[in-house]
Length: 493
Image 1 (cartoon, one colour):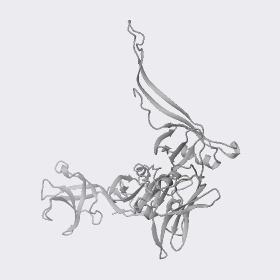
Image 2 (cartoon, rainbow, N blue to C red):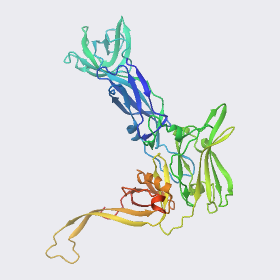
Image 3 (cartoon, rainbow, N blue to C red):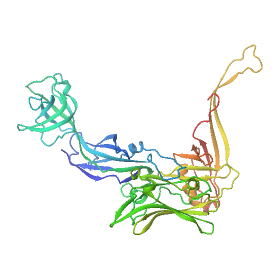
Image 4 (cartoon, rainbow, N blue to C red):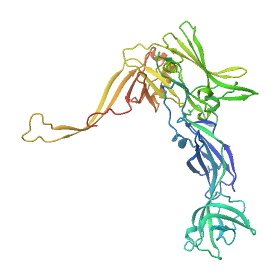
């Protein structure tokens, strides 16, 4: 049985947009038809039910013989995202992260010759037995491809079968397969095993989330677990799933923080530490408004198995959740994710500036999935222009010789209507201009309507985006062209 040695495997948490390298090597990689096999298994976050989502055969690399493989594409196809801007308590984002592991092994052509017998008194089974197979090379659960020397006599034995027993019988190495010998005979038939497929091990459990790995985050040296995953340790820090440089929000707007949490509480150096998050509000004189609102993560979302969560942090979320009556007298508020034990350690902190959005135009507050797989929010509160685009299918008929005024010559058979908007930001910073590249390139964008607690899918029509800078542009805003992500229903749709 070939031995596989692990060269490297996935990090505990990895984004699926980018390679997740698995690499094994075997000293038998040069044998005939040798291939590494990886069977990727998804495990349900709650029930732990296991589903195979893809088996892959990888030929060995030249020179090194490595079985280098990335399951990122198949993992990505099993992920989507959760948009939940109006939540009032911490909510799981189970579509944004999955749990997986893999079985690994190999297949090759061993070229083993064998003789076939029926049970011949070996036991009460009626399955086929193969004799003279080398000891220690085949195990229960292996898959074999058999090629019989005389196909016309034993056609049912050729093809693929599973090994269901391995034992020694009077000095003979014997394997039992899951095929029935339909024509018993004391005179054995012969054949060759042309392929042997066997799994030799199972990996640990890992997590994949719907983020991206950039060029500056090499897959062999940059571990997202160390940067974006929260735990209860008092000596480590982490950050939320965003690159947003400035947090400005209206007095009644929805917003969430996207986080990955590996543990709510744990024992470090004999002390139990627990994750909490705290919100503290201040007026324009920087005087604290009310008492801090502190929540134990394990109480907010008691099930740690989800790992990926959204925290309500918008002014509307906090009002609807009963934390504040209004934000009319609040200038800014802070959020801290803290681990508490014999000492408290701030693992993450951010400030939100509350601003009255004074504009005669419709405010387009867009939520979009960012490069890290979380949702960010931004206001386009200045000039907006609404337009529709209509594509029609028509036919023309010849008017009758006795037509009357009002008879139609051209008729609309069908039409498709899309609604578009040109939207504009207020004056923004250079950092925001650079960060908005993530909005323009996002695959999931929504227009948040806080008045009706709805969100509408939109598509950005622009195919290019120029980053504005203070050096080049001094004072600047951003214009975008968007369209609704659905058709307007009309007559003759």
